Length: 90
Ligand SMILES: [Zn+2]
Image (tube, rainbow, N blue to C red; front, top):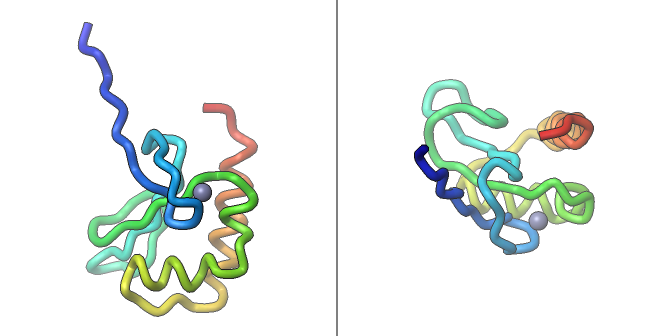
């Protein structure tokens, strides 16, 4: 059996390291713009702790990490996504 080596990524908010599958990936896709959990391009990761995704500075941090401008609506979509994510067992 092949042992799975966890891929570690840093949450852009709390700066803690997590297994990639425990993080939500936000990608600035080359063609489709900002995408959650998919897409190709510059990516940022955020953990699922409420403290992080509901941080008032999260949008700024994301914009900096992705080097892009985020629409105000994005934060709403993003929060919905991450809270629904939290309801699913892994
Ligand atoms: Zn975090």
